[in-house]
Image 1 (tube, rainbow, N blue to C red):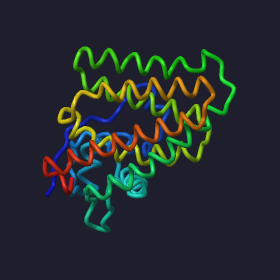
Image 2 (image 1 turned 90 degrees about the vertical axis):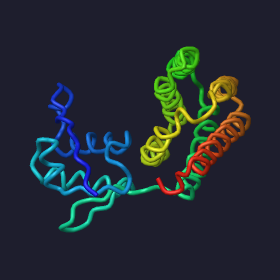
Image 3 (image 1 turned 90 degrees about the horizontal axis):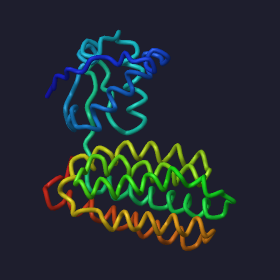
Length: 234
């Protein structure tokens, strides 16, 4: 199956400073995460190059990098296939994220931060609260991800950050399918507040246990939704 896309290349100021390969990676990844390149669909290299207004070389380089990130499979002389995800895949990914983000919460609580160092995390929580009041799930998801990213930054382990970012790309894809299927994530907002409170109190054990429990529950909800609505192979 081949699905056409009609997305123009990014020509903003930031894109001009990036290589063609970097731009191709960002555009193709965005299309995959938004399910505009659906799981299981096949695409010729020439097709992607034409639609993105690029030569085939950056497309080829971009797909090899995205293959390493687990988003697609490169098939020599046959283009690429957008990879599917099973509930087993998501269960394994959430196990990894649970451990690494829990570690980040613990590491953050051991550091000597000033009040202003928590401004980004606090703003993310405020944005999540506002998004729920307005029932804007996409805005909530963006703010939720901002909080998790800030937690990783506060933890200060760059290797953890790199691993988490790779798996986050895969989780975004599934969350886009289930965002409006799940109950209102009010408890998630409260969990974030409690984790941040433990970090500010410099209580690493509580920070880790709270965030670990939060991630376990979030993963459980996601996997149950995938199973309930028949997304056994997404």
